[in-house]
Image (cartoon, rainbow, N blue to C red; front, side):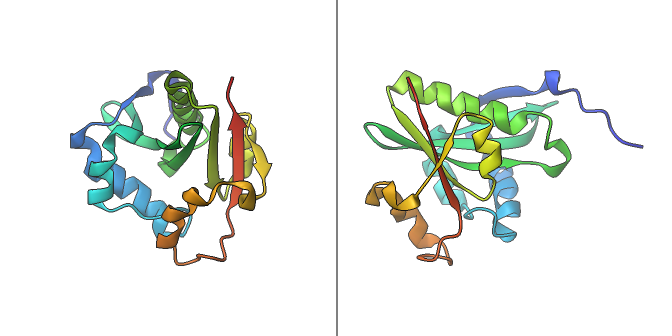
Length: 160
């Protein structure tokens, strides 16, 4: 029997210190499959203000982070949704929350490096050549075993 998922009960909020271990577990499940970079507990603690979570009945089912890189540029990263809850809008809601936060901060462009560009296209992102992104974004990529042969797709969204 399939569980019925009531997406109207999804709640979005900024992550808290108590969420760090759950965030790491969810993100690193995808990292083990080489779908994203792994995150250490230290990285998540240091960047906790970047993260937002989607919860259902007080359990984290999805996570995303907005990481500011420069005065006009931020990255949406670590977008992860528990498999059971995929295709119910949790990931989209979190990315939209990140975009609203970017607008409030006065950031004009948000990008992501992804293996699922179609997901981001539905949210108004456009595919771009990775090499058009400023060099400062590659600091994170140095941690990846695929560097410099990155096979992710770069997407970007201009904000008004």
